[in-house]
Image (cartoon, rainbow, N blue to C red; front, side, top):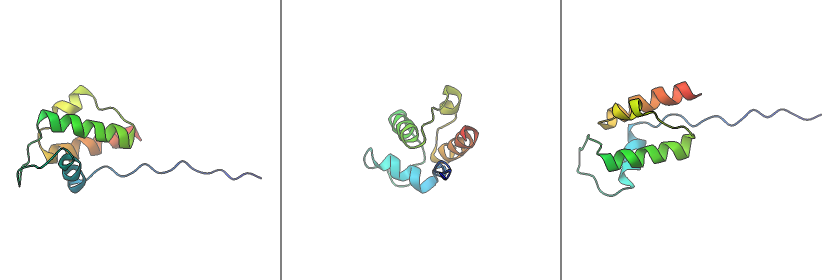
Length: 82
């Protein structure tokens, strides 16, 4: 008799520290920098698409200006994707 194996659980949404680590992948950021520029946003979107297999909408991207914005938007987007 074969056993049904549930699909692997999706990783939890990224927290602040993980987002900061992802952004550090582009190079050094000024200490305490909260703003996310367009290059960093593109990098962040790439990381999310690779890790979570989800595409963010233009409306969601327009809401991301700071690290805290990214945490909030990504948590909502990934919760809706499940």
